[in-house]
Image (cartoon, rainbow, N blue to C red; front, side):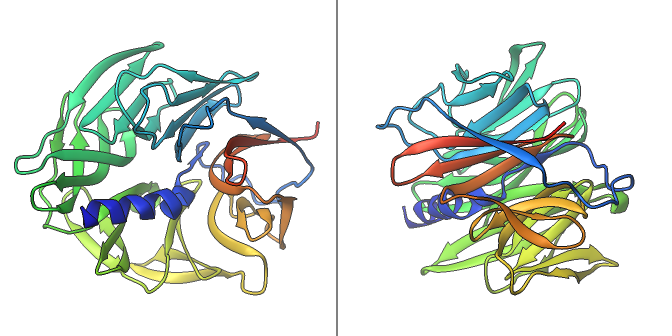
Length: 341
């Protein structure tokens, strides 16, 4: 099935870079240069060498309560949790927890790669919702964003095995049920959705491939209308710092201002590679060509050099956790940076 395989390849080796979670925005208060005096450690996850795992979303409300989802279709237990001391693989009632959304009261939603969305409250998986679309064999959820617990959007795609096709889908949760949003037919896989509060707008990132040609698109979505705003050549990446969406392409970072993409920072000539995660515009991290990069509002540099392949990050007041993989030795590693007291 050429379409399904192609887009899974893109997700596994390209889009895994964009999965992230940050604490609630602190941009208005955080204008001074971000600190760089971190103490770094690495934790290796206890994953069997025969297992294959691709990191997906990582979310948490505190440095001692973090959840990690994967793209592992071979096991129901590849749902990881960190309690402040160690990472453990925990049972998950579904398969492939590909999209995580965590609220401040620790209500956790887990979208999956096979037709279900699960809800976790008070330490228990309490509800499941089966997602079916007539004419399609499977629905996969790859990202969720919510203003409140009664107003959540999920994006992904539906696959038809007999037709060897797929299409992008958007779902909405109203506090009781998940329903499909009526959107135009698009042969794209929606892989990321973020919400920008100050303009009350969602941005959706899609990837599609046909005849070995990969197309990236960014859509603006107001809850009803879906409008393409950019379809560039090259791997445009959608990120979020605080409450603001950012778009990086070829070492340049853009913001969406007055319905237009505006250049914010040009990092040409540095080791800046892709993606940004952070606390504010003067304290954000990214994947550099040498390891973990950092911009403190004044300059950009690699603050932790590593050969590991980097994926998603989650950031707190004094801690940062980065998912990574050692391809050569088939090890999955969480890099932990903690600011000195």
